[in-house]
Image 1 (spheres, one colour):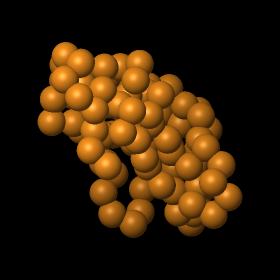
Image 2 (cartoon, rainbow, N blue to C red; image 1 turned 135 degrees about the horizontal axis):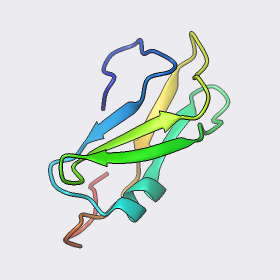
Image 3 (cartoon, rainbow, N blue to C red; image 1 turned 30 degrees about the horizontal axis):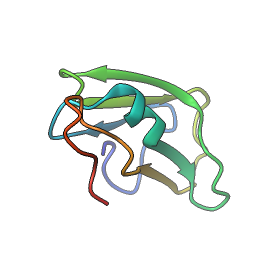
Length: 88
C-alpha cells in the first residue's frame, strides 16, 4: 500500500499493488479507506494500472490533516482469473 509510513498528502491517491491481476469489480467492492477515529469511509474514484495489478484510489475530497486513516481490502476481492480470493 502506498503511501507507506505515518504521513501522506491528503490530496494524493492511495495505491495498492497485488501479486497478480485482480477482478476490478470485486476488488473495488472490497476496498475501504476510512478514518480510524470515526470509521467514516472516504469516497473516491478508482483507476487501474499494470495489467490490473495496481489499484489507485483518488479521494474526491482531501483527507483530513493529522488524522489516521485505515486501508482495507477484504477477502472478497478475487483474482482476475477467478482463482481464489485474498487471504486475511
